[in-house]
Length: 224
Image (cartoon, rainbow, N blue to C red; front, side, top):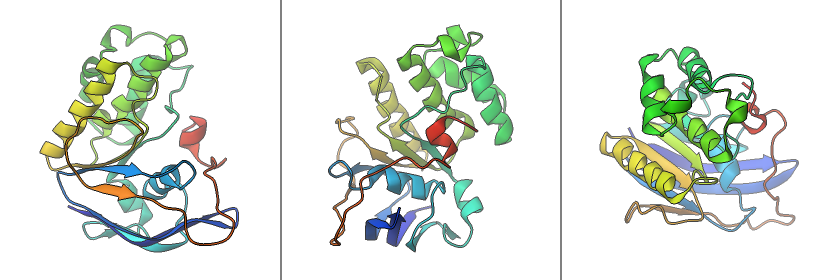
C-alpha cells in the first residue's frame, strides 16, 4: 500500500496554507516533512489524519481516497500530534485501554506498548502525575496499540530524552520493515538514513497563513 498525494490544498480562515502538493510515499518508507515554521507541516498532517478538510486535491492509501471516503482512510492512519491526547483523570494503562477499545484491537497490546516505551512500571498511576516525557511516551504508545499502516508524526521527540528519541526512531524502522509508512515532521535528525523528503514551501499567493490550532480538533485539545 502506497500513499499518493495529488494536488492537495488546504485553506484555513480564508487563507491558503498550501496548494498543488504532490508526493508519493511507498510501503516501507519513512519520509521527513520539512519547511520553515508556518508553512503548513502540522496542517498537512492533520489533513491526512482526516481532522481538518482539504480545500482541493486528494490523498489515497491504496485504493482508498481521502476525498471520497474519509472514514475508511482514517482507519489506515495513526496520528500523533503536538499534544499527547492523554486524559489526566485516567490511569496510564487506562488511557491506552480506551484507544484499544475504540479501535477494537487486542487489549494485550496495551501492556506490550507500555513496556516498550518504558512506562510499564507506572501502568496504574494517574496520567496527571506523569512527567512531560512520560506523557509523550504514553501518547506515542498509541501507535503500537492501534497498529495502522501510515504513521503521521508531528515533532514526535518533543519532551523526550536521547534514549527515548532513539526508541522512536527504532520503532519507525521496525514499522517500515513490516511494510508500514511514516511521514514525520521533525526539526532533528532521527537517524533513519536516506529516505524521501517532502519539502514544503509557502504558496505563491498574497497573505500567507500561519499554522493555527483548530478548536474542533479533539487531538489538539486532548479530548476524545
